[in-house]
Image (cartoon, rainbow, N blue to C red; front, side, top):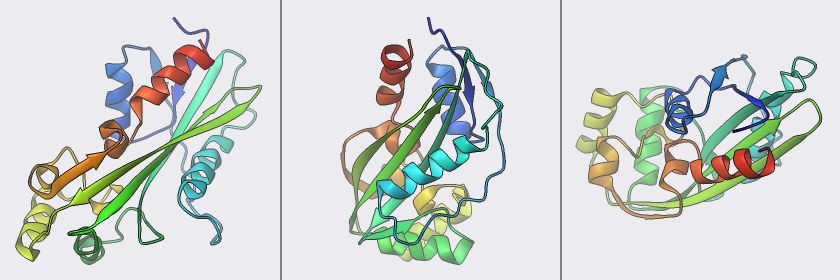
Length: 190
């Protein structure tokens, strides 16, 4: 179907599952990249920068028939980026901040071939109901969402009991705007 071999440069089990669900052949190649960005960047400029930084790690290693796909997701609340929590207390404070608020989940996806690099992004608005301290602690103790931007997974218990509204792509909140990625793969790269 595609003229490119897909290299998914992500250790995220959720992103890997999405690619399996696409029914496209792909290979996983992950490189460790220090995810640091300039302080003046905001919102999607941060995720674009980080997705492209991850792709840059493959410079000079991409065959003519390969496309490397990297991605980055963050939660944007009150003009501030919320990434993965540092520890339990940080996760608790993040969820307290999200409680009874609407935030944005921003995911950027970078497609890098030997000839070019292109990045797309998506933004989804998510509204939480008021979360009690007990509910937050139960969620953190039971699901341990320390590898997730914003310290939560919408597909987990917290999503069932705490999210009252979502505007935009559900899969974007899980970690990949699948409809946009599939369209890019089949129409722009196809």
